[in-house]
Length: 64
Image (cartoon, rainbow, N blue to C red; front, side):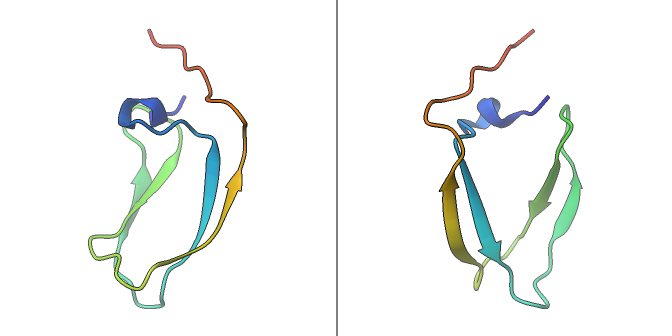
């Protein structure tokens, strides 16, 4: 399961980014989830290339 809803992400869009060569960052598993995340301490130069709508309404998450 994903932790998206915890941070206000409604999971309705997908963004495609270009990260310049040499950009330092960290990649790893999502705590308490099943996905992978990327953290860039300095995201200068990162460009959003495209944003696509995945769903027309918010996903409903089951919380335990």
